[in-house]
Image 1 (cartoon, helix red, strand yellow):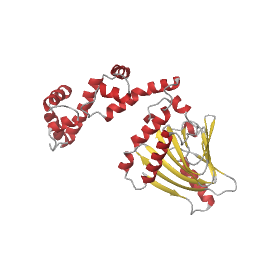
Image 2 (cartoon, helix red, strand yellow):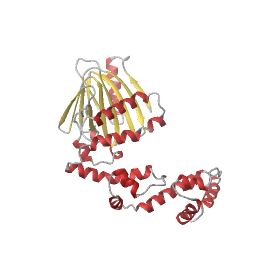
Image 3 (tube, one colour):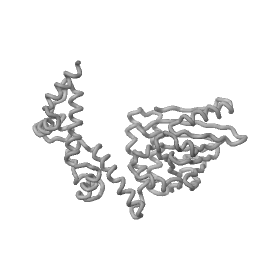
Image 4 (cartoon, one colour):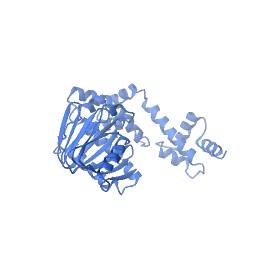
Length: 321
């Protein structure tokens, strides 16, 4: 989804009513508090990057609040990352206040109340990332909210530039193109939350807690790699192979069995779709990380009780009924 909200041509009273209704029905509902004697002026652009939503806003004449009541609603708990492109703004959450100027970045969450005040003409980019996608403990995230991030720091600068560029191309990008940017955004935000915490006890605990989640995510994205192994996982995360097995075992995952089963599930799904037989069994085997046809066929029969050819034939028969 990508949409522009423009209220400039409406009477001032209508603007307030329409904007209030829009904000209360948004993905993360908010209250609008107009400033006495000032006209509300808002121009915003909304775009989805997979599960992430971008909200680009130029606004004047009021403040927005995520009240205690709204913070308990049924919306998906999200981390919000705001980059101030121009103007100044103030954000208060969790007993902290961040005063932000152009170029600054701040993090906050939808699961606690917050207030945002902005000077006339302020432009903010805000990305809403479901917290579950980050795979990090809530207490680590909470410790980072409402703190102005220094744009002179390398990671902050790189992340800010990436988010600004993603926002600038969003209007002309397809849903598929925007969706492809979801994972890079998640990785950058995850890095923002965990950088410089490795020497702190809370940071070590948080990184250790999230390691299993990040490993499982890595396994899923690399499942078709023929060289996927404890060694490649250890190299990716900078840990020993022994620790790889330990972390996965705590999650109830036996690495070899999990990889083989997942590959067979994906291969079976591919064969079930290819009822016309355009794909060779060997190409499916290779696509999902099996070294040769014979090995794949033996593993497939052991897992599903029939050969790949029989499975495809049965899928085609069932599809015609």
